[in-house]
Length: 395
Image (cartoon, rainbow, N blue to C red; front, side):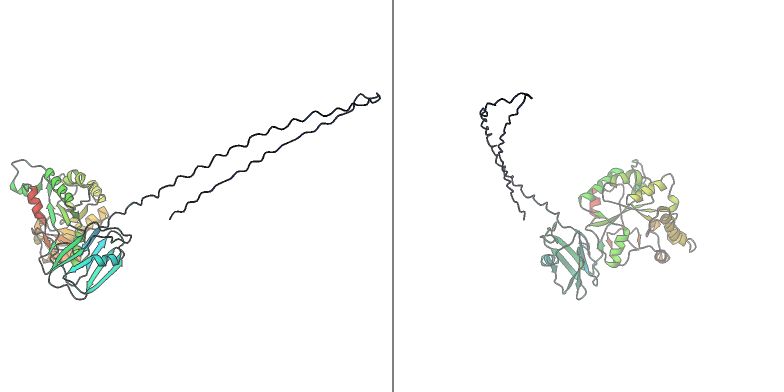
């Protein structure tokens, strides 16, 4: 509450009157003093009274209106485990929701509904992170969590929109699409079917990215996806991975200008022996892309199908290719892409030994399998795919 006071200052004025006197003096030395005639003193003029100044009233201060407080932005859900539509929720894992600011636990509890109801505890390990731990493993079948909109933030901020997470235990997988691109360029009408399979036009790529942005999709790294599949780490709403194989120079000349002012970022799978060749990215371009947030994965050392690699050569394909980029770019490279989709048990064991956490196959599926981050499925985008067909790839 604001308090206002008014100070009235009164000024007093005094008028001072001053009177004067005269004195006579004898002169002319040596002469007998003459008897001085006594004259009456001249009359003293009456002082003129100046009128007292008129005091103007002090103007009253105009009351200042209290400023209208700026409303706080609504609360957003930034990540969850499970994500909406997860059909392979791991039954012994807790359910986690992360908000973008501290929350009011009591208000959240009143707005929260689980169907079917479960017994358990709700924890807040951080002011913006809620964890639900059931007393027993989640039952097989379908579940739903809803969070009604309302003043749920710690300062009374409303939830941006009601939250609904639908998930199930024992289903076919986690709906995180991984889009697979190779070359981004325009082709002549006479281009071969093989070339059209592994190429997308710049115009089509731009249209596809605009669709993803308009629909609210969020790109994540392969490492984030692996952490979700293996440890239940939350992911943002509508997550997907954009993968681009081989390291063609158009990633810098076409893809980078298109995406740099957006939040979409791809992972680039590059064989070290491609770097600097005429059709591929050079080191300066790679450094600029890394600085812009593009992720780098390895694609074998020289794109050899790994089933055909000898035992002696496999460490070069897996280990040396990893160290090559880490030393040159100052990054951690922990994602691999099987050249031609070729791998075997030796490959899987070698990836683990060299510290990889994820790997990409050519399996054309949208659903990922919990506990199998080295066998991620991808969806091929080709030259002749329409935008409608592209949208049908996504769950």
